[in-house]
Structures are given as C-alpha cells and as structure tokens.
Image 1 (cartoon, rainbow, N blue to C red):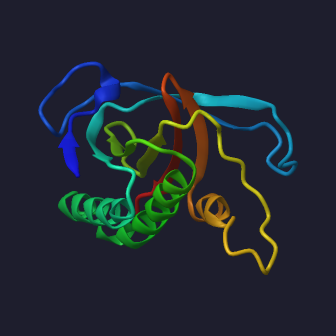
Image 2 (cartoon, one colour):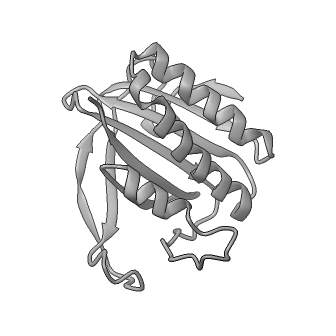
Length: 173
C-alpha cells in the first residue's frame, strides 16, 4: 500500500487539502436495470479533506484497503461510518480484483461545503462499467453493487481515461 496525493487533481498539495471536479453518472431509469442510458447527476466541487491509496491487484488488497479506510475515518472522527464504509470498499475492491488487472485506487473525500457527506471512490484500469444485477439465491456472487446501492445515499460510475471509478456517498451523522 502506498499513500499518495490525489493524482486526479493534477497537482500535489499537502496530504489533507485537494480540489477537483467530480462528475457522477447514474442510470436514468434505476428501475430498468438493462437501460444503457445515463445522465449526469451534477458537478461536485470536492475541495476539502482527501486521501487516496493505490493497491496492487493481489488478494491482500481487500484487507489493506479496509484497514486504510478504517484508519483514516478514525483520524477524521467519523468512527460511526467505519463499518459500512469498510464493507462497501471491500465489495468494490473485490470486484476490481475479480474483473481487472492492475492497480486499484481507493479515495476518500470530505467536501468542504458539504458537512454531511463522505464520498468514497474505487478505481481500476478496466474500462467496462459495472452493472447492478439480481443474483439468484444459489449464486455465490453478484450482490456487491446491490449492497452498495442499498447502503449508500447514492452511488454511480464514471469512465476515466484509463479505466473507471465506482463511487458512493455516505451520510455523515
């Protein structure tokens, strides 16, 4: 695990302050899961506290990502979010390990103008956007995005220049 500045920002600043624009995408019709149409949900100025890690695509990445998220949320006095954030990051990092090769990025952002939001992003080099699906009772996988969708305030995906990012927001109590 390597702690680094938010590379997406374009500049390196001290470890606690970053700014960037984040555009998220969500299905236009969330009831019809097979729709290919997406809409932009808005532009969010994410000036505020931010930390990003990069993990190698190996089995220990899930445990390391979970520990990193727990530690940073404790440092930010957001202990009430550690269990759900660690669970959802575990699911998304596991998905990245199953479907992609290459580094996996995890990013936490506390936007300065939104005191009640924690933004969590997991990135990987695979360009294919994940799709939520309904798993059959006997399926051993396929529930991660459902868990993210039902446990977060909102979530989505966005393509990147070298892969994709899956993001979700948690309400800060």
